[in-house]
Each structure stands twice: as structure tokens, then as C-alpha cells.
Length: 283
Image (cartoon, rainbow, N blue to C red; front, side, top):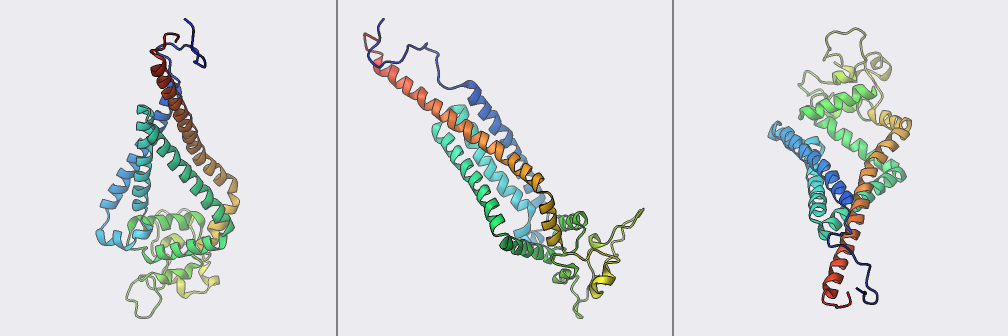
């Protein structure tokens, strides 16, 4: 039977422009990150509930649990759009997923460029965050463990120097400070002792009262900001690899969603064309 002018080639009744490979690859891609987001939220909520309310409120700005919950919720909503959109072939959800993922990718790219261009301002902000963390060192166990890990890992003490620990009310050097840790630093500032079986948590006692030369025999005197900057400069290729590893899944998600949206639109055009020409005796 002939075809009308401009009619596409005859397709079987089961033909579809939508590729099952693209559709289900995007679905399982989003499902994986959907599960990861739920785990992140669960861990963040558990960590938040395990803290004392007053301690949690005191260091809200530097609480890792809050950050974990917020990132997990945003990832959950984003991957939900991707999962349902791919499974139901919903153009609106897929476009929302693609747009949000593109915005996230561009924000990360802009943050990296701005961080490089305005490195001095970034350094000042990092210093502010570290000083705030020092102030709340004894208020939050998770924050305390994080600071201790960082100081031991980077062989440093404080933000600019070990004397930054005077910002903390327990380590402050003022004469009216009744704390037993007055003018001290945390044990994580102390130089490692070979074959030490038990950690001496009082090794930083009175170190802030000493000058740099005397204190350097017992503790790290260099601040963590300079150590962190040096570490970043020494590991640029590693950090670049991590950034690329984060960017590739985002680009794959954007590409798959755009391909699927294009295929769904072609399928809708085919269905409309078939409906319009179904009564055509020459079709």
C-alpha cells in the first residue's frame, strides 16, 4: 500500500524511538545515588540525635551532621526526579533532573575557578572556619575528633600557630581562667613519641606560655592553614583526579537524560503522526 507525501517509512506496531538501554541505564544510575543519599541522610540524622542539644546548637555552622543531611536531601530529591522520570518517561522530571544537575556542575566549576582566582579570600575564610572550630573544640565530640585527626595528619597546631588555642575558653592563657588546661594545647599537637603504648593527653600542658623554639621541642608550632595550602600544592594532580571523578557521573547523567528526552519527544511525534494518518486510505 502506498504512502502519502512526506510520510515516514512504515514502522512495526512495537517500534519505539526510546532505547531501553538508555532508559534503564539512567534509571539504575539514579537508583544507585538515590540509595547513597538515603544512607547519608540516615547517618546524618543518627549523628545529630546522638549529640547533646546545646552542643549541637553551639557549633551549628561547623556541624558535619547538618552538612551530611542537607547534601543527602538534595541528592535524594535530584535522583528521585531522575529515577521516576526515566522509568515513567516523563519529560518534565527528566528536564528538571538535567537542569539541576547542570546547575550543580556549573556551580562546582565556578567555585573551583573563583577559589583559584580569589585564593587570598578563600584563605581568610578557611582561617575563620578553623578559628570557629577551635572555639567550639570542647563542645562537640565529632568536631573535636576531626580537629585532632587534622592536626595529627598534617603535623600542625592551631590555625596560624599553636597560640591560636587561646581562642578556646578552656585553653585561654588569661590569669582568671580556672581551667586545668589553661595555656595548654590539645594532645594532637604533640610530637609523636616512638614506641608509646599509652597516649599522654596532658603532653601539651602549658605550651602556649613557651616561645616557639622551646615549644617546638614538644609540639608542632606551625599552623594548619599553611600546612593545608602546602598539601594542596603538592597534591594538585590527585585533587584534579578527584574533581574529575565527581564531574564524570554528573556529565553522564546530563547526557543520558538529554538523550532520553530527545527520544521521548521523537516517540511522541511518531504517535501523533500515526494518529493523524490512521484514517488515511493511502497510509
